[in-house]
Image (cartoon, rainbow, N blue to C red):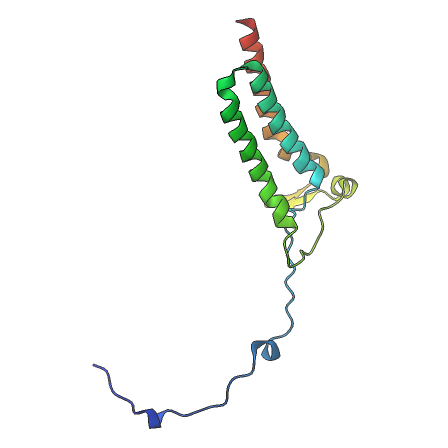
Length: 144
């Protein structure tokens, strides 16, 4: 059951200070580049598009134009969104590392430090295997 409290019982206080005056300056600085160089993302996109090119050449049919366009748009969106994310405001704390710096310093993963060559192998493994699979399929189709 509720209890009625008259308005005269409430105590009035001055308006609180604005948050900017109370809180210390906390500038937002985030790292959105995943600590990977831009060239690594470009190589990944190129490998995916190479796979689509192999499939388009292998199964050259005008009925596949729309699916290939959808796949291309999907790849562009999948890598374009993070590319735009890196350029968002407020400014992020770090630019993507240069290729030489990345190869020298490597990257820290959840399981520990990974050298530059190991990180490149890990990132490009899936797109390379997909392209290899596409080439095997193309070779099988060519022998039929």
